[in-house]
Length: 394
Image (cartoon, rainbow, N blue to C red; front, side):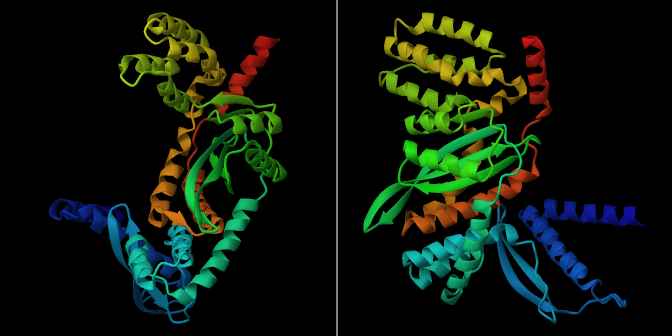
């Protein structure tokens, strides 16, 4: 019987996809609607119309709710119970970031009409002005708990990066640095360890940021990836001297453009880029020597700079080969930065530092959900790599 029902369901899905240009949208809407109904069944202890002594309550119709997804707006009907106790978890993922955005818009002084239009477009529903105070209080409490949570497990890998947002202070708009740290634990999962605001990327700002992480229990760092900002590099050496430092090779290649004439061929940098795909440090150095010999006559300024600085970008070769592509740059933070950029673009200029930090931390919490759900790398490779290194040393 179950197999027949499954085939029927599959056939229905195929019919929707083949006959309707918006078939995928409709399938996802139908699935999410079923999730809502199943949540209500579980909460009441009985299906709709089912008579059972274990029943905990009764349904009381539905209310409309629009949810923004990657396939567009989904118009859903959220079930209600008579006691008003039912609460779905389906929208939880979107609540923190959308509340932070709404709170920011109101604090910024955007008109109620514009806020309503923006929130309906981005979030699928609007918030009344009377809700903002309560939203801020609940949101700030949860974000503070996230930002101050103890770090109990060791993180062998640490990735550091910063981006800038426009913030108004005393009537003047300035760029404020958003400092971000992501760690990879021994299970191979990523965690956003900290998100903080700083006036600029100074040595003292990064030092305070790293000391804050240590105060929360950060330990076991063996390898750090970042760009070559002088203040950041100095802070790493002072606070985490035991860790090896990898200069992000993507930033390095961008910096190389400063040492080339405006009109230059692409082959030179492309061949430099290929060096980072080599299996080990010996192959990389052999290719580097060939590259220097080929291009030093045409681009002496570039080759001189590369020869002096490139060793900082080769640290990742000491890691297992399967980890190279993940730890030779800070690119793993790109998805988080893209999401921050997409949301903060709506605000453009934040009315104060607190509002900026609120939104960015809310996005960090949202991103953390999918980060933790997936193992990023196999840390058994690092364990075996370290054992082999110990045997060779002995």
